[in-house]
Length: 160
Image 1 (cartoon, helix red, strand yellow):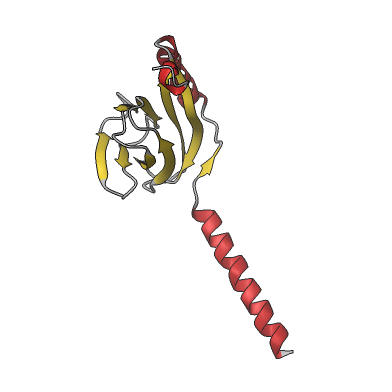
Image 2: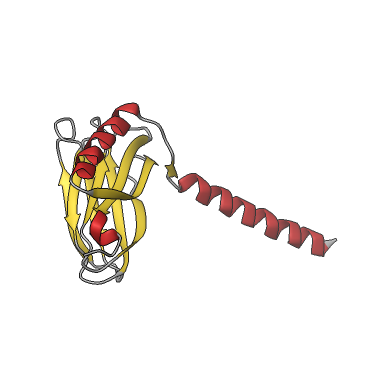
């Protein structure tokens, strides 16, 4: 009997920790027609310049909580990082870290009601897994945003 109680307690503690972790994770796949439309318009302009979408997601974020994205980027490849946040936010931030967690750059918007998107051009000096951290300061509620990475068609296909 004692063995069953210990096993049950162990299983219960695992389930509780999984449940807590699941609640803290932002989710991918939210819907905000305004943000989505704005993101698609910007991506269309990049596509007209010969770029293709490498990664793309609508992301539901908790207020003031960072959303991290780890992505493999190739040395010398030019990428356009696009983050479209909420116009209701008071601050939008995008940070880029290398594979050793060194900050490469940080972009912050302090008036998202006027300009709620960040476009960042980046050509890695080495192939690595890079970390992009997105944050929005907004009062009280979850917020939907868009994050995309675009790359040059020719170099993406190895033609350069």
